[in-house]
Length: 192
Figure: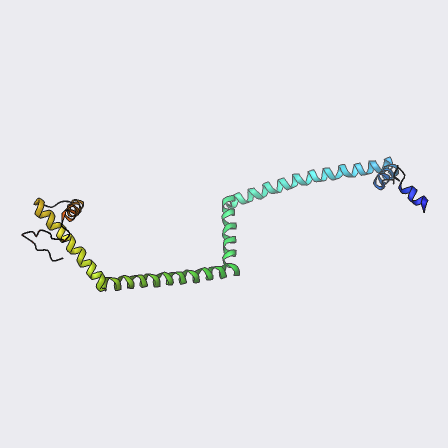
């Protein structure tokens, strides 16, 4: 057992021969000059065939373009035709039909919801306008505006802008006594 432990403790590790290096060396040494020339000859032939095929393909593509031009088929018309076909295919697909139906249903439901909401809001405004508190408020506003106009007309003998009427009413209101004794104008008695 000591010899094994001693082998593990040796300062130099055991080296193995690289298998790829051995196979490369063997291949290079086993190929003869004749085989090498034969492979190079075959490679040259393949490159020539590829070049010939490229020339033939270019010639065929040119002829193809010329025939399309004679028929009046332009790249733009081809694009339009392809786009229209793709659009048609998409529209006739099951996924598109289901999505379209779902969106249509959602739109109808949303429209119905907004209609219902609008009706409810209109009804609430109508109810509010017909309520006694709103009518009382409306009467007070009308009365106040009428009083302001009468005050303005009585004090200046003429009309004026609405802002001027409000300013004078505010000034008059600030000058009134706490008992709200307002001087009555001769033309109009205040009832508010």
